Amino acid sequence: MRYITASCIISDHIVHTNGKAAFQASAAKGQDFLLSVYQHTGVQYPKFYKMDTLSKLGWLACELLLRQGFRSADYRPEEVAVVLSNANASLDTDYKYYATVKDIPSPAVFVYTLPNIMIGEICIRHHFKGENAFFIFESFNAAFLAQYVHGLMESGSARACICGWVDVLGEEYKAALFLVEDAAGEMPLSAENLNKSFNLNTRHE
Image 1 (cartoon, rainbow, N blue to C red):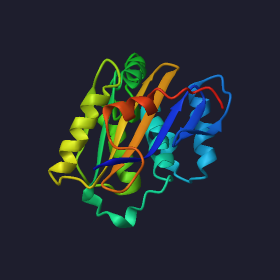
Image 2: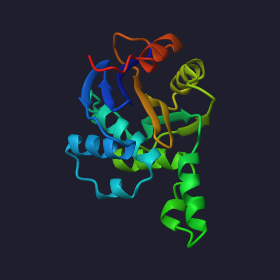
Image 3: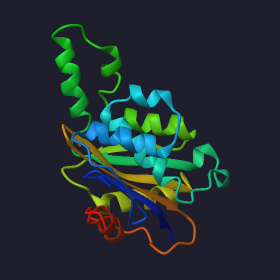
């Protein structure tokens, strides 16, 4: 049996880890809030400031997710997979890049005009070398993710998987990441349990 051993939801200026509000900051814009979350982590990672908004959001959600008991020493780098999804791909960054084309195209922005670059940023940070995939859906597709991750781990391609949803468009954003492991836990991997966590009431408790 595979279990969801940790979760991190970031939306509406609140961070939830394992179902509980862990950090909240009122901010006029999503970028300001993400900077507050980054400062809250206490991590010194200069490359963070160069990332696009989508990568910052996914990077932060993964950073906080893995602080909920993940034991990296239990896995080889190639045994940890990353499977993410969203509705808008890299459209938020695409718009920003298009705006630069009117003057001088920005290579620094262009490099983020693919959503799987976010996975690359996560893997670089945590030295993951397992299978990774990015899917586009109109909305969070818990049934597909549960089936895909089950298949991935059943085949032996991974022993742990970070999966979920990271989406940004303008000031609208949401990240919902889940750590799935072949380890004892209280929440089996299922579409129902993924949806339950994804739809967590994000008002501050």
